[in-house]
Amino acid sequence: MKSRQLTLIKNTKNNKLHKIIFWLCFLCILGLGAACVIVGFSVKNIEVSGNQTYTSGEIIREVKKKDYVGNTLVMMAQNRIFGQKYLPFIEDISMSFGDTHTLKIHVKEKLRSGVFEYMNENVYFDSEGIAQESRDYLFAGVPVVTGVKFNKMVLGEKIPVDGDYFHTILSITEKISTYGLNISEIHFESEDDITLLSGKFEIYLGTPAYLDGKMSRISEILSAVSKEHEKGTIDMHLFTDEKNIITFRE
Image 1: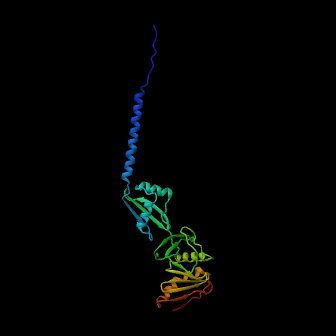
Image 2: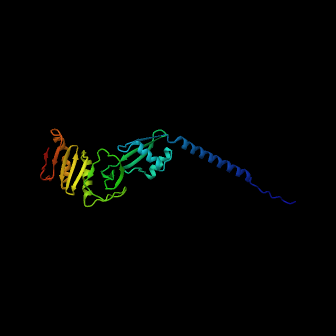
Image 3: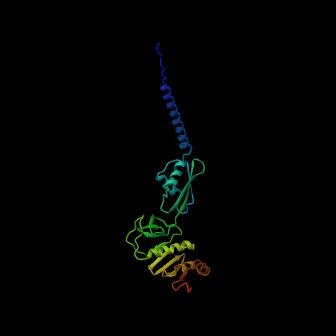
């Protein structure tokens, strides 16, 4: 009597069907999750805070120009990874959301060191002397630099000023910020002949020597003379660290 050998045959059709069902379910779950993220975190409102000179509208327009995705989570991720600045005088931007449909943008602006009038435009430069942006109006609190000659000016490039003017300009604008001075104009007759304008008062510095000592005294002197006079000239050209020679003439 011949013995029979039984062979166990796997049901491959059922296994394939199970795998197809599993992957279909997995893709459905992924699709539902993606749909929830897309719909549930869609941007309907944008709130801007921390801005002082740029308007909220300007910032929102720039954000929507570059790599914009109408999703709060995606925008926050892009901001974390790439750290976009969007505008020349923005030092840092952070993003968060209030509710899932509101993108919150917090802005930290950089100081505009000064401004040159060039070809009927106001060109603002930063603390490195680079021309960053051009406007048809003046920002309050940014001193206009006059009396300095140059041939051309290109946005994004260092302003080509001859001599040592820029070192002096940046030193003055830094101290204006440090001492909280209201200076509307920095005028150069030459590198060693500097006058500041504050309201109707002229402050004649003379040379850049002893600059920090001179600048540190301006606030208290302006406060004193403005109590009795409407305008005049504060002369500091003889001032040194050893001799605080300051005169005033109406």
